[in-house]
Amino acid sequence: MFQIDYLTHNGKLIMKSVIIFFQELAKSENEQLTEQLNKLKKYWKRPLHPISNPNIRTPTPQQLQTELKLLAATEKKEDATESESNFKDYYYKQRWPLDEVNTTEDRAKICKDYLTGIQWVLDYYYRGVPSWGWYYPHHYAPLISDMALMDEQFQCQFSLGEPYLPFEQLLAVLPIASSHVLPAPFQALMTNPESLISNMYPTDFKIDMDYATSPWEGVVLLPYIDERKLKEAVATIDSNLLT
Image 1 (cartoon, rainbow, N blue to C red):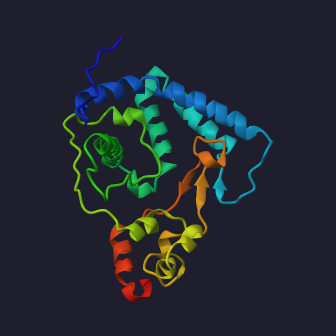
Image 2 (cartoon, rainbow, N blue to C red):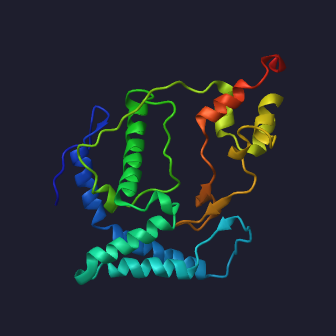
């Protein structure tokens, strides 16, 4: 039985304890992933309820088998380090652009972003909003075994910034299909191809069935909102059109 101190104190992460916790979870990561991948492999082999939507990217049995083989190789003592590296390379390169996960430092940054997200949530509920503009800039989570390698001296840094105004907030969260609920000038920012931010509201996008079996469990691969560009676009609206 491992011993660990509290994970938080007054709403702040205790990094030393958090890393010990991740290290313990990492011991069963391969087992958990193998179990999940076997379930997915069995599910996606079935001919029942095929998904015909071309925008929904489903895993093939071959892809799942590749991950299973790489995971199985990490259990072999003689080449565990190399095999683990091979699995991690596959995991990240299947889910991130290659130029974002080429180095150990790249993956460490993803872990820092994920941990910063945990701290943001804690601050939000215990102390108030730590940053109005912060967001997790990835569609996927890092592996626990990489989280376990975090430096216990790492500290989350936030800049408070300012909240969106009401219509800016709606522009940031509504899909283009809901643009009709906004005043006409704001609708145009979403629907007019000439708008500064029209690229933030694609009508054609992918849903990645990463470790999922139902469309609503998939990862929706939408672009992230650029706060600076959004505010610049809103500033172009003639206020007289809103009265």
